Image: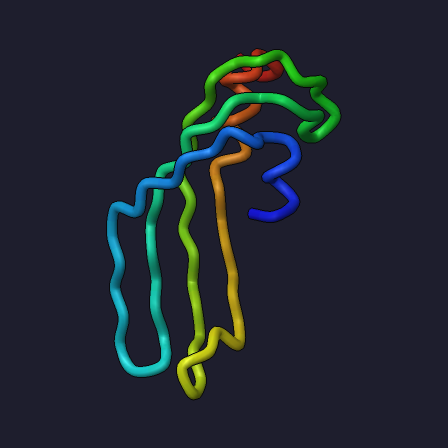
Length: 84
């Protein structure tokens, strides 16, 4: 998310689902942002974008020790007009 913040500084994240069991947690969110910086070679265009993300966390002693994420890059590129 930190690398994305410069490209999309006006961001709102809506967490939709959280599932946790033992030392593992998963959450699904929807991000709402405005294109203000280059993203994957595409210059900023001021468009309002929405995309989904899934985050997988492993937690030890109350701290996140591993984090994997997957987000809809194709959806972002479509909204930016790069892909049909």
